[in-house]
Length: 442
Image 1 (cartoon, helix red, strand yellow):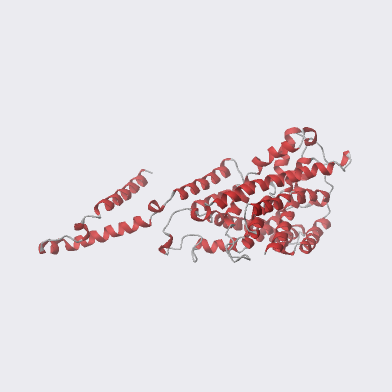
Image 2 (cartoon, rainbow, N blue to C red):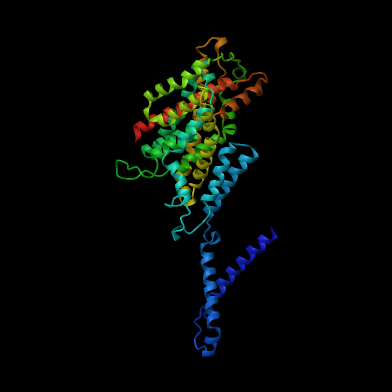
């Protein structure tokens, strides 16, 4: 560490000397009235010194110390906070560590017009090539393939009515869409912002890459803004903060008597049902919303690989190494897209605010609808309204939060398997909602 500080001090000292001495004419080989002897004896040395100082000048002008801004420092601090939350509190570490690191990488200052091809928005740069998967919506379907290969739909198959809770939670998407329109966002931009309410990062990235990519032309001739970065960061941030945001809403909208309701154990689901579900689900959802096919097609395909039991190698690859690789690339490039001069705008602040409201409305929608359902159910069939909060598609974090909250009021009441039904239906619901918005707004 001492050696590093010593080297750093020497570089800074030389830079300061260059700043102070660079103005002395003699150091630039421009000494007036000098003798022929001086020019002969010291000309070459003076020229070498001038070249060295010029090299030092160039080095310092390209260094981050000269080009860093307060905006860069602010964003780097945000990246460090993401990494801290992931490591210290284990808030979605598989997402926040790559995103936080990407934010730091994306905000390392450099001379943008020097042709170094370093930034994520510079054509030909390595980061720009990796960002292609985000910009063109390649990564989200691959993520869905892995999710499908990891997901067990047994709880949903066992109790299909719980799918309504996942559908009810999508109200946050459409209300936020209307709110974004009210605040002056264009139709495609509002649609992309609204999907944050589903708490589904891949879906948010997929939809924003289609509607708010900075390329599409609006009817009035203007170009939509590139909102992929702010939308993706907002979606993943609220996914990570599920354990913080949801519990207060759950306690506010339910009473103690409702929180201790015991539900019937899910029935056993046959292998045939598990195999038929992704096939039937693929056909029905594609007919309802063809635009959601890239996401739901991969989701159900991945689940079929898992449940068929004859493609174990493919299923293991999809839910293992493949989804890990795509998650790394997705998180890193999404984080790097938060380059300060592009990301720090009033629009980003509005998106974060709308995203928070959207997520809270979605949580409340599932809780309230669960209570409404209980009005029409017999005492033995009533559902614990806490599982309505799992209607957002943050799988399986919302289901875990429901489990934790249920155990707070009854240590023997396990709600995890029940909560997984609306949780996985929320994934399907948010993808269908994204497809509907895409159909109307493209």
